[in-house]
Length: 355
Length: 269
Image (cartoon, rainbow over all chains, first blue to last red; front, side, top):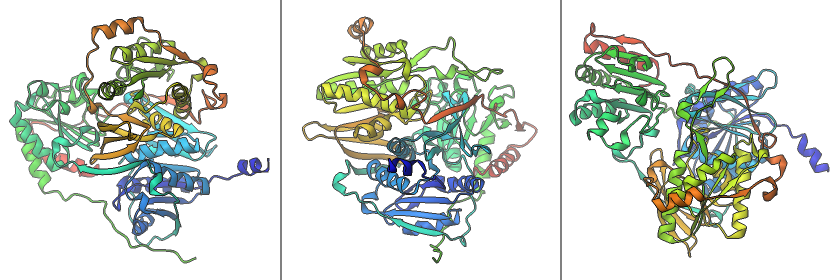
């Protein structure tokens, strides 16, 4: 009975960000969530807390303070060297049960989604996947979690009224990268994990990084350069490959080039192919029939290059260029060669506050 | 190998729209299909059965008409099927659904121990990818998501080796059985149902598990047992397309320069 009373008066506070890292490299989605989390924490009068699990991850704290965290909790353990569901779930659940965060945000990456589902189930709380907008309801102070559903045809705002933490995942680059301030400092807390290797039911045997563009699944690409019938043949796709390289993206196609054998079938986008939601979709020589549109209209920015000003693709395009693709694409490759690419890499030394 | 495969009947999401005035879902006349990822899960389960022996049981949670999804699983090679259905399940979110499905699998497990559960990566209506891991956690099965290939199953040694499709490459992982896999579309090609399976499916009546039969805790199911609630739904802002930034009156170099400026302003370069 006494225990029950204690349980019910637990106060949940603070906004937590799970910082995803692999081999000591932070996935930028963690920084983006710190930027958004800062805003939410300030609205609530809460602290912004970053949580890092891994092996040899101590030096990451500085970068995380620089992006807005007030507090960093680190769990450094050999068993956390590679991401595996079991020990990461155990580690994060232990922290949640000790500190009682109000909100826990994670990246909607394969790792983040795998972990978030396991943690939410363990602590019996609500989890909203792939949020595109977060806010604090002024009256109830609840987290408003907005996400697309039904293939992007519907938006839904979800609340988690009673269970804590309120958990959401957010796709990479939905939120802006906050500026890094290397003078910021905060409180660093080290926690431990009591899990032996024998307990863990999985072992990572090998990681085969994509070495060749044909290995990269277009669903996970941030930038896609897609070609249509207007490319005229396999050689045209060679030109698209150059443009994709200049943009750091992958090549895809509408249905006709696949049917004509210019491109492999796993590159096809549309109703009978794949659905993609990249940050940037460049449609070259694609008319934009509805069968193609359903596979790419969820892209953040769409660029269309087509010689026919009446092509339906221009109705979808954020930026349209009417012109001959065989002139515009080489000009674009040349223009991109002179562009200095922005980078999110700012590294700060660990700064620890006294006391 | 005793394999359970989870399938879901979903609306063809390409046709779902929001009513402009009432802000409610327009679902009338929209065909129901088996979640496309789950077709690949069934194929993966049948392929394991063919190579390692065993049985495949397809399960689904949904209204009575969801038995059509089970018939499709039977036609694709599943041996048995279970419909998990009760009015009290309506409104369950992913946490509650994970609870109901895990209890249904626990019941099957008590009849004959389950070695492997296979689910699609996610459903196309909810797109959450949360129910598979939810089942794995509740049952204490090894959780292996985004599986693109089963490399090895060592049933006597109680282990499985799979390849997982991650953003930057493929990860090869060994896991203990029993395990729960969620699979991606690239894992296999769904085959056509052979005629004898179609005949079997047409006559097939699945077992029914309901609230009482599973002995579920009412506080963990339906709307009441779901921590998340939908506050509102609305139509997405239509694409603000239609801006022609350059036409034939500009040189290709000018058009290219204009586009690069726009992409830089959008932080895409």
